[in-house]
Length: 158
Image (cartoon, rainbow, N blue to C red):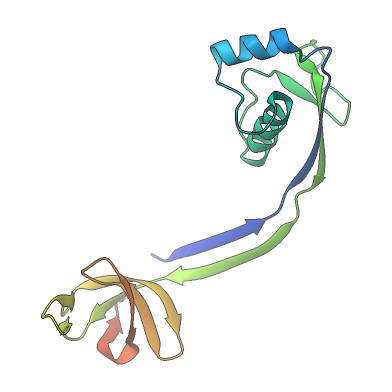
């Protein structure tokens, strides 16, 4: 079985309009009473924009807000949309995607430090954190990420 670590770096930018005649103080008080405090930002409306953007960026729902308009258009025909919030996606481009195979290595010998602490144990499997030219980076027995020569290890075939 192969295992991969995939790192996706993505920048997202949205424009969120909030109609203060609909999302008013009464709405905010009710929202904070039943959902959560709007204190992520300097202003209640900025906190609502923060929530909407966070929910969109994380593919979450808009519980407590209703469904915002998308570019001024409703996704529903039953009147369930939230007319007071208009959401526009400006940019959701992928900046970078890195794929790295994760494989296990075993130590050829036990390695101790100057205080006789066992850092690496012979024949124990370790997950490879990263690989550089002639070195492996692993998490040792003390919980620290350390670099050792590849000569101290061999790969484990699954």
